Length: 469
Figure 1: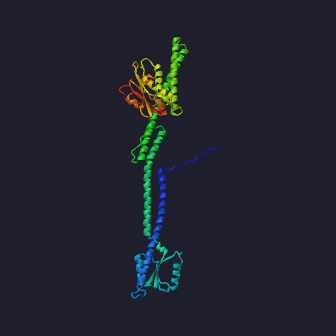
Figure 2: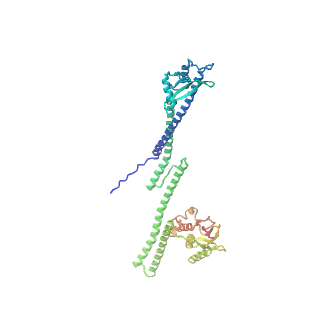
């Protein structure tokens, strides 16, 4: 049964961030506006009730004459209207003046005794009434109550906010939303551009185009580091691709040469082109070529196994002095007369290192052979092997020669895989994995292998191994 794959629609950073930001911002500002409106209404109601109380007290003071009696002023209605305009209170205000017995003496707007009782009972006795709130002021002469002034104000008018203020506040909220959206839009666009360039460059790399040029002049540190890192990565990939092509060509050539030679030599013997001693000589040459081919394949397999981490390296406690003496002695037995006997500079006391004796031998023999291979033909070569403890944690083994040394332009590349100098390419056949493999072995034992500072003549390789107390 065929499955229908539903491809999820992807959105850009610009759309994704701006849309969600505007939704979250609008919801947050709307909630803030509602809470602010509620707070403003409460403050407005409290302030207007204080104003209403002041008005009630003023009317009570004006209703008391100088001789201590209560008298309703003929201008009281005009006073109430003036105070409404001055304090900007609602027209829904009701002013009531009564005597101590509760009889109506004055009301604005005019009310009957029954209407007054109904309104006061509804306001003063029912605390849950949503319609009016009252401010009461007593008309007193000393301790005697002559009457009271009651000013009623509707809750709706107390909470009323002018349309101009609502419009102004709404404009501010809308302006903040637009300004915030514009800010996130510009920031998202600025962030999206370098990501788009990196994505386009990654697409080019996936198509095999490694020559990528990016504008790394971004002001933001993180974006600048991203662009620079991607630029460097593309350069490394281009270099690795070129190295891979050169490596494949070199490996193919180096493996093809002995195979072709072996095939030609064996074919000549089998067809009877050569006979007798000459045939035996041809077979000996074929065996030598087969041995070289076997060593190159072994080097390639060892290198791949070590880089993959599947080669076991031991960490034994080793007395380095007798081990180095034995390694150099065995190596010297296989060398020609033009190689002088190596000079050993070893400490008088035992020096114990931690490592694998077989791997240490591989490294030292490879370094000694490299010195011999780099020496000019017919020129005696002097090798020096020096072992010292450089600290409480590490020992240093220096292998120096008095040969031609390493050219300055290739010093940084001697440990690259499959790299060989032009002189070795013309004189020797190999894959160029010896120094690379030796460095990997040294690092696997917890040490290091580097090319020492160039002496007056020759070259020096420095092998560092951890000490074992």
